[in-house]
Image (cartoon, rainbow, N blue to C red; front, top):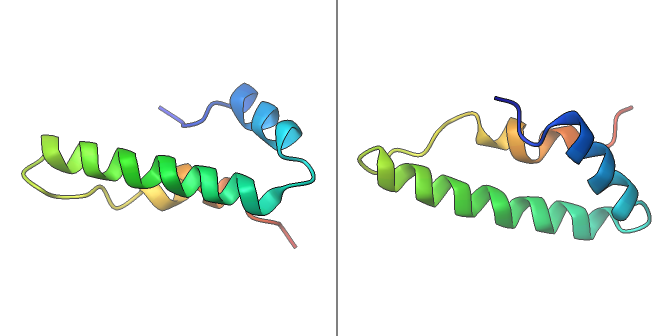
Length: 62
């Protein structure tokens, strides 16, 4: 399942339109929390694809 969904991505981008650094900080916080929680469920192993799912989509394209 994609996280966040397309609707949520658009909402976050609109909310943080002029504050991209804050959006990245927020997403990194969520990323770290998810990584810790998922590691607890999987014998301490952190999923490898979380970076792409949590933060890569918000990076500037160019």
